[in-house]
Length: 245
Image (cartoon, rainbow, N blue to C red; front, side):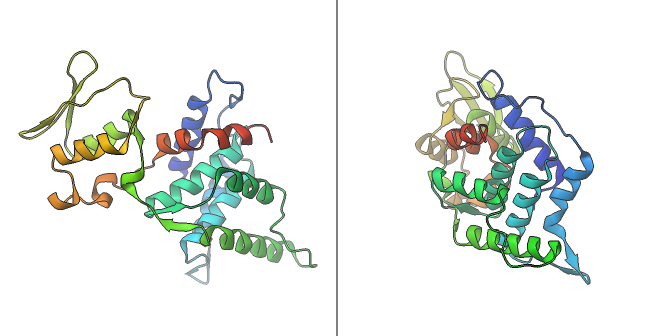
């Protein structure tokens, strides 16, 4: 599950990514810390000491609902909510298999309460039914993620490599030196914000013996870290569209 610090990191990454664009998150920051805490804590709701949400789909629905509708941030709540949803799936070795257009419609359906039943019921029951509907939508689209089909930006990859004990230094020109013990590789490097495609990533892992064959499977390599740069790059169009609604 994601905690408050994770969601704050997502918001801050979005703020930085949209600086200087036509859709800046302005003003940035938390409007109400209590609303943020409440949004994040929905994942952990319990009844009689038992977790209310026992599946990833339900926990993701509760988290998304809270961030999108609590409006804890001054701006960028919908953008933070969708990145949090993608991140929660990712750290649980899952992905959301949906087109950007479908994700866009999903976000609008949630914020416009289209998952809420029309039958007369208490507010609590209506919200529970709404979250259940959202969970159904998410669960149908959860799929085991394929790490090697994922590209990263250098700044994100550097974090993962440092977690594996890799020393990183400039190698002159457009190269970067990666050293792990006696192992060394010198890939092309053209800036922290540039993407590292799957072929380059596979070579780096092979050269530094960070592959499943070497005892470093995908879970160990990616380490459950938030893949923020990946999502900000992959879903830039979606995030830009959400800024207008």
